[in-house]
Length: 575
Image (cartoon, rainbow, N blue to C red):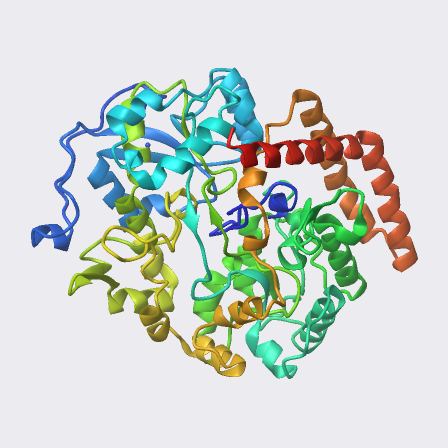
């Protein structure tokens, strides 16, 4: 997610609060080449005016570890088009922190990885990833364009372990803005919210109370399963227990105070303790899912699909459910309620790109030139447009010299379901080099869905009901209006490039942070589930805070604050 977006788009997700806020034999395999590539062409190519001709280079397969990618990406049209245009078959491995640790320790990293920021120093010092400066000259023509100059200089200066070499290629650089709908936030069943009379939500307590009333009215599914109001997924490390920061704006960098705070020890300004309080209040109301501290993301998707969960911190788990619910009624489905306070995870401009997403080539790779070919394409204008908007001539086209999305593609996206999923559009936004709103050489932006023309045509019955209630023209405009009124903060209020430029944690700090986070993960269920009343909650919370302090939480924060201040000064001096 951006020194955000989880976005998608993953929600990413910022250090501290940003922490609230992965193909046959390949370079690391036997080194065998893939058989003759089929001459598959798009409709546009057949007409002679489509994408660039397929490369003459012999096809290879690379093992590529990607962060936050759907399981089905290798069975999509976008995947096949990347393969056709680059001659590289991606054997995709999704990032898993524990597996990554094992691979790193054993020197068995995939050919291409997306670097977790906290592992950057270790990867460089251990020779696990290779410098890319020479490969950039021979196999990175798009990356040599002026558009990328500041970002690559930034990477050499701040993401090179003081070597001033280029080890990583950033993704999602450039400006961002609201899309069609705001995906991260307080997501609930719209028909249930409407049934309650659109109650005002001004606090975490209000959020819980609204959900409790929904569960009281709709406590079982059609097949008799119990419905819960609140849950979370736990396979994104500490993302789940920090997730309320994506609404409140609290975190290591507090967007409300515009200052650093120790979110481990300051319960009044903390994404961690915001989440704990929200879960505790849900438990008190009897609407907390018993699996809240064990469920993984796919479990949450399953619960949403079977109707046993009626809220989430993002729309991502509800994509499948929304497609089915629309068949049951015009106003049925999940939406993000625009809250007139706090923070919404969108916007801002960044040269550093999204946290934990920068591409690197591992030292294991036997074909680094081809790996660079692939990275160059993924982050190029053409690759970014393909990832965000689909295939030219198939999903979008030029009309009077202007790139526009085809209406049938817009309708496909609105309908959702398997046919839409098979396009692969937007599925690897975490690997897209340029942000959705970056203007390309053809005059259009990367993501052609994010235009007024498309917004006006893609409203389904659920969206229409939503925008009519809020008096806007597309769903995200409801939140955008609150931002323009100064009621809600966004990523534009966070110094993203400062946070990204902060040095890697030294080993002693890394050990402290690991211990603190482990204590937090183990202690949070005790605080939430073991508190019978508010006094007990505060006592249990303080007991865990004391353990965190004993484990070094204050030492970690002191290092973080000092590093932040030094980075601010370094950026200001341009060195």
